[in-house]
Image (cartoon, helix red, strand yellow):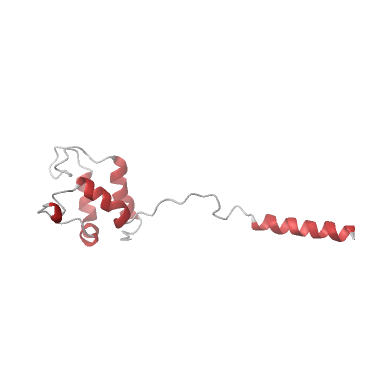
Length: 117
């Protein structure tokens, strides 16, 4: 009887060890998903108003909608990477370049497939 109990305990222990493999995602923090709605909209509303937001009095191409930002993403990235004083620098009204981390949000959004939501 003792042999059966030891054997059963061994199998049970082996079973649990197999289930606890390191390939599972337990304990890994997932990076927030970069989308137009949750990542770019706040940046645009903080830095591109009023020029690119018609409801705020803007008269430039509106970037308060997904399709326009998706279409112009390469130009947006090019212009926000310029230095203040260079022709085409954006955000024009701020007179200061966006931080590298904010610029990287636009780049990562493009690299991860331009998701809307």
